[in-house]
Amino acid sequence: MLTAWRRKGRGRRGWMALALLAVLLIAAGCGGAGQPAAGTGGGDGAGSDAGDAAGGGGEASLLDEIKARGYMVFATDGAYPPMEFPNPENPSELIGFDIDLGKAIAEKLGVEYRVEVAEWEGLLGGLEARRFDAVMSSMNITEERQKSADFVQYLEMGQMIVVPKGNPDGIQSLDDLKGKVIAVQIGTTNEQVARGIEGATVKTFQNFPDALQEVAAGRADATILDEPVARYYANIEGDKYEYVGVPFETAPVGIAVPKGEDELVQAIQQALDELKQDGTYDRIYAKWFGGQ
Image 1 (spheres, rainbow, N blue to C red):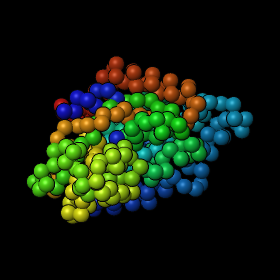
Image 2: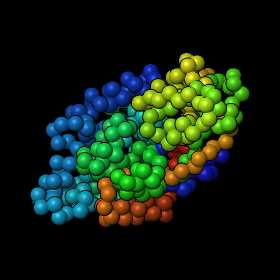
Image 3: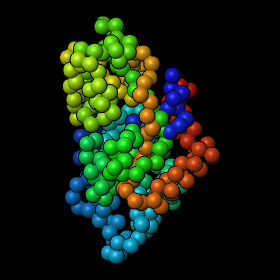
Image 4: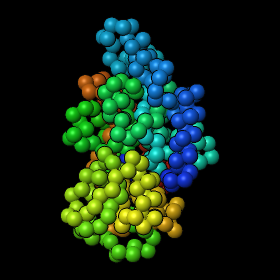
C-alpha cells in the first residue's frame, strides 16, 4: 500500500539517541558535505555566509548567494529512518532518502551539499532566521506551515498506526483508537490526527523514538507514524512493533525554503524534474524503499 506516496512526492531510543548525540558533538568541528553541521554559534550555518555573498547590499537572491558561496545548507532533525538518520556504522554521518535526494539536488544546482541538525520544532523558525537555506526533513506541507515558508513537493505519504507486537487491543483503524492512549511526536501531523480522535489521551514527545518506546513499554496503546517509518520499524524491530490497517491522511511532503525566494523554488523544482527524468530519483527511491 505504498503506492500513495511512492512516486509522488516525513531509532530506536538506544542507538538513535547516542547516535544523535555523537552527530551533534562531532559535527561541531566538521560541517562537510554529507555530515551534520552544528547549528549554533560561529556563523557556520547559511546565515553569515549568505550575507557575505550578498556583499552586504541585500540585493542578491538566496539562490545567487548559494551559488556564490558554493554550498547549500539543508536542515533536518536527523532522526526519522529511513528518511534521515545517523549511520549506525558512522554516527557522524547522516544517511537516508532525504539525505541522498538532497545531495542529488545540490549537485544539479552545481554546489556542495551540507546538512545541519536541528530540533524538529525549531526547523521552520531557523529557516525564517536564515540559519540554513532549506528544510528537508520529511515535512508535510500544511496551510499553517505555508504561512512561514514556501515548499517544493517531492513525495506524498500516508500515516499508519503502530501497536505493540501481537496487537493486544485488536486495533485496526482510527475508530479503534477512541478512548486509547496515543503517543506521538509533538508538532507533527501525526499529533493533529491523534488529537482528533474522540476520547483519546494524547502523550507528546520531542522525538518520535520516545513515542515508540512508550508503546513498547506498555504506557501507550499505539502511536501514529508516517507510512515508510512505520514499515521500517515493523521490519527492524518486529519483536516489539507491528503496523495495522491501511495508510490514511495522505499528504504532500516538501522541501521548505524561505518565503519569497522564488528563484530557489524554481531551481529546486527543475532539479527534481531532471532527477526524475534521468532515473536518479527512482534509483534513490529503490535504495531506501525497495519494491514496496
